[in-house]
Image 1: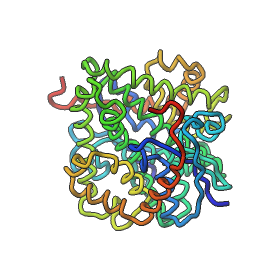
Image 2: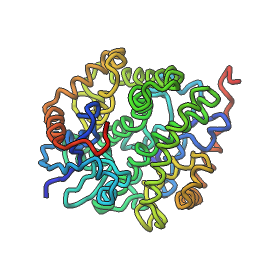
Image 3: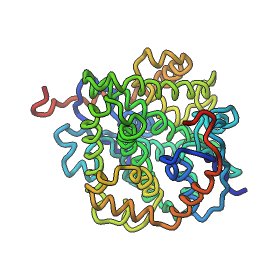
Image 4: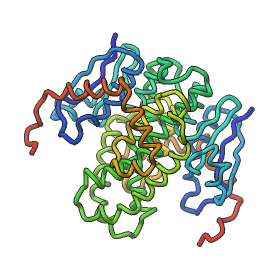
Length: 219
Length: 219
């Protein structure tokens, strides 16, 4: 069977194009694997049907006839294991890609998520300005270190795009443009990754699923 | 060759037993794989020799003669791929374990890291009290959802311990005891995981490497 990926049928404007099923759609597009999305309404996400697939009441969940999973990073790994377009077959190459995948979702996404908290979810709250120097300093150090390692390579593993780049670019593209621009090679890297046709198709597909209405009570 | 795992030869008291090489040591112990640690001094972690192995100037890095890696989650995955003690061989079972591994280090560790920031690294700063209701609320929801999914199973995948439990327990064991105790099945789960002989051996081995001195200027 073709893969099935859960998604939302509506999100607020700021979240459009950023929901985590993007990572899975992008990986499937890079791998050339057909799939269908299963968009759900916001008011159904914490219901028992979705929680059976995704215990935290989120998206994406994934099934392909052989496995059932959640966690976008794990799903991308599953897809990458089946496609040399996302991960080389030799053990040393696989290990490097797995390194960058966890690096993206742990070493990098933790401080990125802190900044998103300050700038978006808790925006305007007094405490966020007290936290900002610490959070931005931490994140800037991580970005500087990543920039040094990337150097002038087009991708983290050298000349070829992998699932590690997919997750890294998906994390970094959420940063404020001015902060990313402080590391010009990282800004160019994110642009290089997100201008790939597979990313563009994934983005169009996520946006096309937003045909629903806000949940009752949404202001 | 036996695996080689980088570690520190000194950390402050609060960090002893919590450095990320614990995850790797624990996985190697569960898998029954001999290894040796390579402890480095704090003042050397950001030097070029360590950055060549670990671009962020941290530990652990890992090598086993076939691969060279960093990121504790990725290294645990590498070890689990080679040991049925940590991951079943069938695709559906592997997928479930990979799901829990990424869940531990992304869905769960992001809010856990926020709380650690408030309680430890930025402890006493005025902004932390403003942030606390939001951070604790977010984390409590995640813990409640995880508790519901775990139910009365001994481990996340049912009856058997996997690499998913290893990472999940390693993340959750850093929480304040009172918060974890709000979900009694999670508290019992963490106790179940960390009372395993392999965890105890890993802990003893990390502690035994702390034979060095604080870096110059440490107060």
